[in-house]
Image 1 (cartoon, helix red, strand yellow):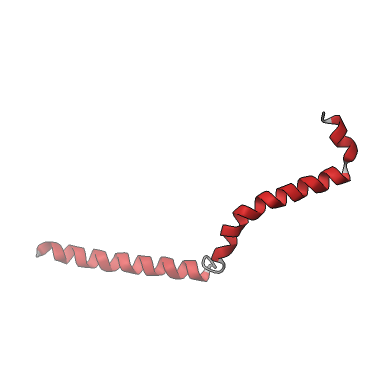
Image 2: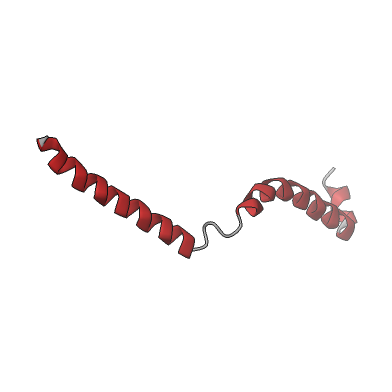
Length: 67
């Protein structure tokens, strides 16, 4: 029973901290667009391939020197 005098305030403080962290995350936009980051992993590879293709088209002479 004596331990409850310690555990209840600690649990309440913990809950307050968690709520404050959640509110901070919401205010800072952490939950704005959850799908974008998941798709970004896939889009980066495609984007770099497109960038490489554009570089090859813009600099065809440099591609010959690399071989």
